[in-house]
Length: 337
Image (cartoon, rainbow, N blue to C red; front, side):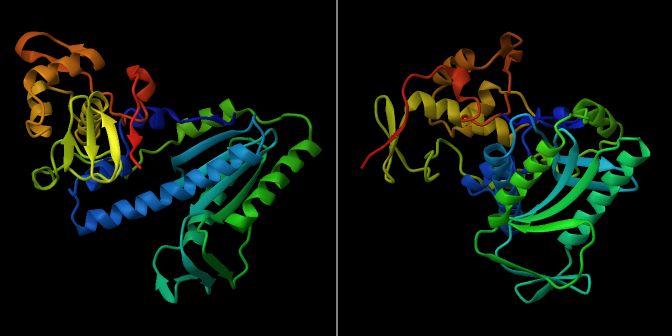
């Protein structure tokens, strides 16, 4: 299993949901305006591309390799490495773009679907690659650093008219072969001379805060989004309540217990800056459950903080599906044919 490392800053940031995760929950509930909807789509697209590359490395790479995702550094200015790969004797920086259509690079200008765009993926990749290369060289880390730009869009064409120094430009159908080449290079140098924790220590010294963290939601967003239990499949709020199951017109049937816990988790991501209180949970459910039911589920599945009127419950700040195994639930949802 490929090993994942994080800088100390990332570990602290990982205690909270990402901006994409918060926008995702708000999008399900119709809470986003057009600008935030566009931002969410961009973040979701980027996330899909990064996950695709990571899955390729897991499937076709070596189990002892180490990856570091979304590393923000400050070295002659702040920059991000979408994915850093550490093998036994080499280091690779990946810039990942999940575009569609036609992407061209000519006269140091990026053109997408015939239109010039301000964001230059090639220059961005060169910057992070050169900065990492110089950082390691200055600190006497001798491993070779290689850079690559990976375009992960399935229906995508890349035309590079300029010579690009130091970078491999790859499309998704070339990635498997590239990973095999990395593995083959490692086999030709069977000794290990890379210390990933020495590298991590250096990156910790230059780690920067991710500037795109989640924001607290505004009253406008809170008022706009749908409250209550929504379908776990199609996100509609129109769910039929049976004795122990909730059924949606899309065909999804979900145990009522699961749906209540899931909705509490959704509240926890949207309101990541707060612990859970009975009053806030009842308001978020729009009184679809009573106070007694809310307290029972909070006490059973979430750690209690304090007693009496000041009682709160720990916000795990994770989706229901990420924390599913911790709840010990017996019944699963199913789809009616």
